[in-house]
Image 1 (cartoon, rainbow, N blue to C red):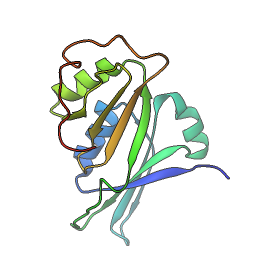
Image 2 (image 1 turned 90 degrees about the vertical axis):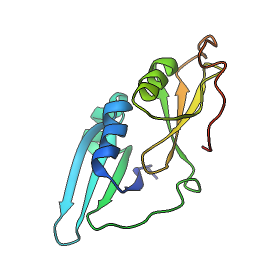
Image 3 (image 1 turned 90 degrees about the horizontal axis):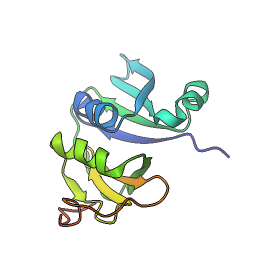
Image 4 (image 1 turned 135 degrees about the vertical axis):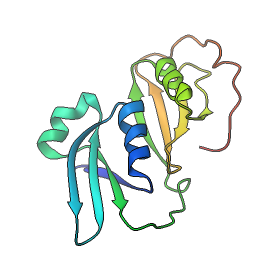
Length: 146
């Protein structure tokens, strides 16, 4: 058995691509648009797994965008997506400066949670050993849920 992808439905494709690609750094590896079905599938991969994803489309995140408006609920019961990052403080700063709420700040230098524009929890984990706890993260309170 092989893990292939995780699918998340998105309401605003541009906002979601900005979040996943421009802010988190994922890369689009495949796109399928169905005129008849009125949907688009966009497969994204982490930079460190790009070659594998290009060859096999795994492991990827599949963004499903339905062209007709629909209301989606249940982002919290989905669980979360997890990514290891080179510098948790740098990615959290980039997200914060771009208006993304840091729901669970990286106070410990190891773990943080944010949410995508569609309410999907994203866990960020520091690669290797935790970074030395530092401000402003140490003093930041949790905001909302993750």
